[in-house]
Image (cartoon, rainbow, N blue to C red; front, side, top):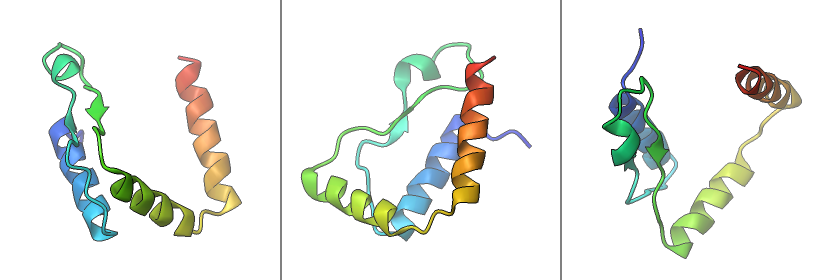
Length: 82
């Protein structure tokens, strides 16, 4: 099932809230959202320094194994080659 950009933004908002991070300006980019592109850009928006620090702490606390890093690099290479 293909989710809309709005649904993805809501999922991201919920996931961030689950770890105590709130990005007040998180939204669908209005310019790309109004275009005919199937996937609009997600605007992560602006946040204060405390929110940026909290997000950094959450990301640094995550245990990301090498297997995940390899997979992310692979997906990124595939997308760039399209």
